[in-house]
Image (cartoon, rainbow, N blue to C red; front, side):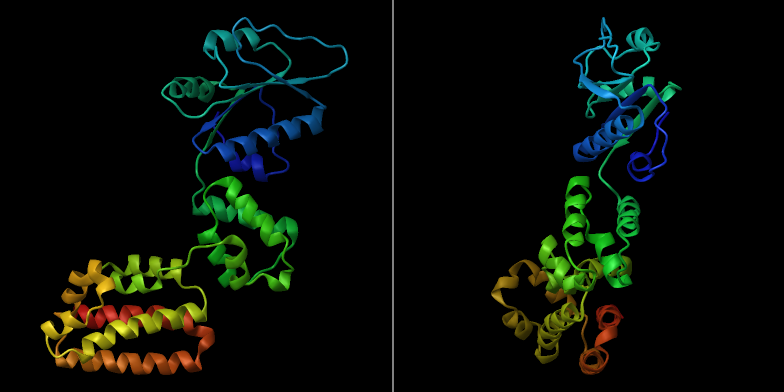
Length: 312
């Protein structure tokens, strides 16, 4: 039968009752973590010892009078087929097989998928829901309380590879709870939040894409202020240019890759729209100065309003 690797990882009362484990996938750090957890659970529960094997073909049990149970561990183990599994089925020990995805593993997976005495555990990079599940357990176990902004920031930013995510959580744990801020988290996790000016070049994209990119780059009032002044610069170029030729000449050389995009934006602007854009800049800057706590909300609204004026 197939099970979610996070069930083994996060559920302390998960019963490991099967004879065979086939741990596979393409995310080796999660595969290795699951393997260690299985070993630890069996050692705790049955004081089992670990023995490595290369093949189960012609397998012979190494009997011992002093050990109640063994875990036979085969990494890229040879001889895995229905006939050989049948030969070792009556063995009272447990077999854990570890093998990354390949052309050969599909057939082997089908064997374990149908086997009532087997767990098939596929390990892939963590999606957002999986990261949230791990993060929630981390907060619960360590009795940490963080605000919602930091929570969703981490839910998006934590790495999809298990070992990197685990390392990040351990670094957060080293902070005092009062010091768990977005600024400090960015320092210790070396999160890439550069490229805020690129959000201006999302104007012709769908609102969904703009919102997603905004949430990825903008997390603090200082981020919003930085974005605002980038956008203000681009908007001021439009407002101050009397013609397309005048505008072309004002586009900085370093923006040569975005030059065609910027010209297409300018072509959408009449005198009336320029006045609307100027008014938007004025009202937004006024709001950001007064409502710093809500600036991330206003920052997104500002970006969407630029788009609305541009394409209307």
